[in-house]
Amino acid sequence: MYFKKAERKKHYKTLPEFSYKEVDGYKNTTINLPQVEGYAIFIFNPGCEACQMEAKDISDNIELFDDNCLLFLSPDSLSRIKSFMIDCQLYEKENVLFGNVNLDTIDVKFGKSAIPWSFVYNKNKKLVKSGIFVTSSELEKLFLKQ
Image 1: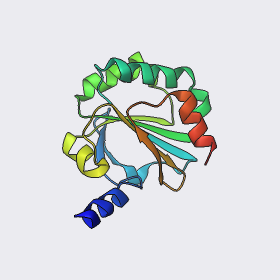
Image 2: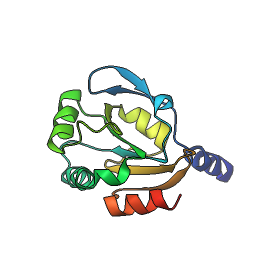
Image 3: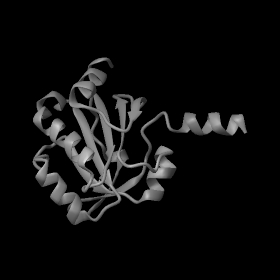
Image 4: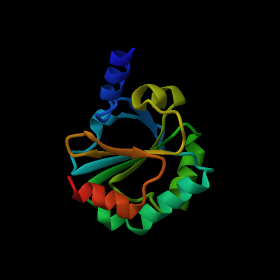
C-alpha cells in the first residue's frame, strides 16, 4: 500500500499530458504549451469568488509573467469560462490560456478534484508548489526562484 501511494505521489510531480477544450471550441493538449520559464495551472470555477480574486490579482500584475504560461482550466461550460476570462481582463494575453476539462481528468492527472486548486511548475515541468490559492507575488517568487 505504501509503495502504491509513493508511486502515485511521484506521478503528480511533473506537468501532466492531457487534452482540454479551448474557449474557441478547439481541442488542445498540454504537450503544445509553449517552452517558457515556468507554468501555472489554475483549476477554477467561474462562480468562485476566490477564483475571481486570484485571477484579478494576476491580471493586475500580468507583466510579471511575460516569460511564463498561465493555464486556467474549469469543468464549467465554455461560455461561463469565456465570461470569466473577459471579466478578469485576461482575454488578450498571449501567455494566458483558458479551457474546459472534465473533473475525471483533473482527478486522474492532478490527484485532486477540489476546486479551486493551483499547480506551479518550473521550466522543466517539475512541480514546485500546489495549493488552494496562489497570489501574484507568491507566483512571482516561485518563478524567480527557479
